[in-house]
View 1 (tube, one colour):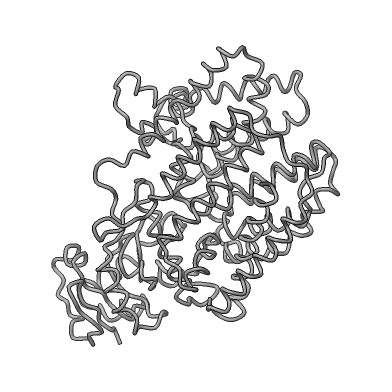
View 2 (cartoon, rainbow, N blue to C red):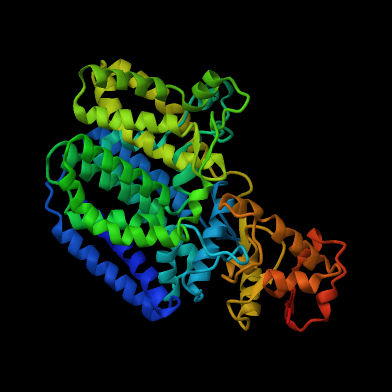
Length: 556
């Protein structure tokens, strides 16, 4: 299984890097570029699987097998229903997918439609795409060759979940598997009083990470298993003086990471440097770095548009505590996890091995730092790195604190740690009541046919929303959902005001269209509801297409 996991992850990273590089050389994704990228990734993956010589880990115990089985069952429930059709409408099971899934769909279709590389932002005029879109790029390779987007979301989601389960087991066996799946605080204990199955953790800052991060944010499908595999290999190589993965395999997984998830890349790089320096094993650390430095440097430069994204880092003491009592905030959000890690850290300092200190102390220190240093405009996005601090401390916390306890006390402690997250996952997996609607198939297909004659570089003015059919067809918008624009560090105010002028047909709408780069305008039911007082002065422009879905005008 280790060889297979390493091979699949190397194949994904290699295909993503090849597609990005070939896209820049050729100008866009084509069927030939997609086929070559996938073939290159598959060849690298086969070579990586053949190169792995590490002895396989111990076989799973009954408890390990139970944790893995539950993880895979939950993953089947979430990813088989991540995007499916019901009554002619694409819906999703998990509410957290409602905003994120359409954005990924937009990126996939935009790239597969032949977007010029390096791509412009398909949801914001005049900006380059500064987002780690590696997972969407790999998905787009298959779409270019004829695959279906919703089907790929399901298939690749399940593949990523299987790889994540294996990597979690390698890193910390059943405790890491269950700790990731059922992360939470104290909020879920309310179920014992109410008897009502709800995600009580959903309204808090620290949510269940499986449902809030892993399922909706597709970059983690690569970043989580690849990152854990790197940590596992570095722990063997740098902390235990054992054989790890081949350095070139580590280097490729590490070097491709910025294309898929920049926060994970930065965290892993810091941990590798810290471990190599603390154990004075610089040379073994450099073995992987020499393979990673070129692809990583190029990917970081492209994804950040020459480090422009570095300006998103800012200082905010307290993270999301605000006016709340700090102790209450920490207790409700994180429950018994923080006391567990604190006790483990004390034990590590007193009598623990160096390995325990080098996982617990950096993890705890990083967690504290993230309560002051924000890494994105939306402070909640710090959870993308807090997750890694959390995963880093799990194995040592179990070995130092929980494993020595008598079975009854250990079972009670596990209940207190995991029950709230269990309630969150169980609630998110029920699927009762109305499900979030992503798109109507008939409308989407009609709009895609109407857009077909327009060149892809012709941006379309629409209402700003996250699941507009024009965006889901892969055609760039003047401006998409304001929340996505803001969370990516872009000032959407001036563009939104000009878009209002254009859509309302106000004096100066032609100049507004020119400044926005709007070459077409979509007018449908959403626009009618959002701009009820529009003069529709642009209706004198050439009509490209019309139907029950609305009208599409060319703004020449």
